[in-house]
Length: 370
Image 1: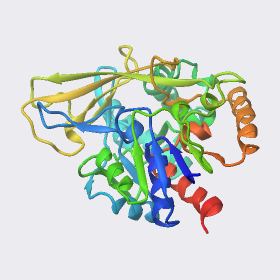
Image 2: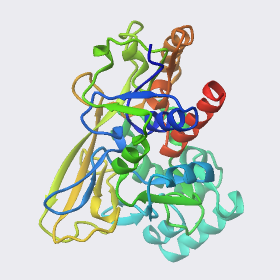
Image 3: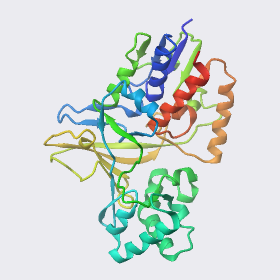
Image 4: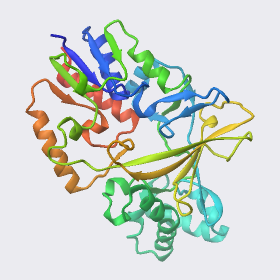
């Protein structure tokens, strides 16, 4: 009987396959029902323009974990890149996340200076204060700032993104939208940041290019007749168990990809639209790798409810009810010998790419390392 089957050729499945093949020197079969490698980090080179397109939305790799960075660096060179997005509100293009630079973009200098001094006094320079925490402050100017940011940058964006009111969303989600008390305009402050020089798909391809790894695309787990000692499943845990306890809710995304007959469409790789239109943001792909072309390619991003057979799972909806439902599946999974769930769909958690890799490292070291 073959030993190892990994379901899913995204970043979690690919990292685990490489570790088993290289460190354990064991044969691994990796399957995926999609035709393309790399899961939701799949990218491709547009034939007309030569621009690398992130099919499932913008992905910028960032981490403070040197082990993760060094591991991925074995499979790619890096284009060093800092994400500096902006947003349109009150008709102006402003820096996000809301920081001290943004203060001076939206308020008069005297007002901005007064608020800046109070922010530093109350919280300290370099701190990120979740918007809902800032609303609790008793200072009238800081309460005004909190309400201003809440109304202009957070409330409507959140409602569009999640289909929920902000107060209905788990604090771990709202904590991702801070006021940053700094003039650092980078979206991430991690030590290591970049985009694979030849794309994420190529990086995953290199990771799976190993004598012990066999990859089968366009292959559904349900169609596999061969039995394996161990199955590592990076797909949705509720789908594996045929939704016997019910579906785990997700938010999905729809992308309207357009080729525009001009050199640049916008001034940043990502521009958010929290208050206008039904979409949340526009991504201009040529910025990722600083690619040159007379034309440009944009993706207009529309959040929507996940529906089976219609779209893809992106963001688990984190709340106690959904966690309780996940726990039922997890209990059953834990009692099934030789079955392991990995990745964001297997764990029903949102992971940045670096955390997904860290989780696989931890899993391999604790469960599989000899």
